[in-house]
Image (cartoon, rainbow, N blue to C red):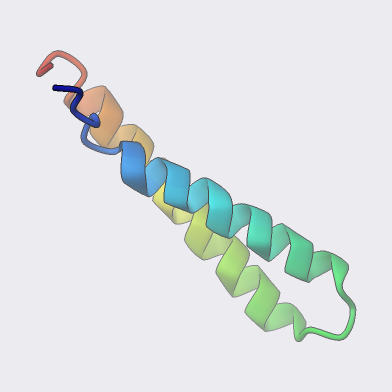
Length: 60
């Protein structure tokens, strides 16, 4: 059975949210604060997922 490594889901989710935030930044009609918040939220998930991946790299 294939198991997903702990931290992979937040990292992938963070990548998708970061891409969405970046796309929102390109659209001038969306408020800059909202697009920056989404972008930062995505980056935070990437960092937290990477930390989990490094901490639990020997468990599987």
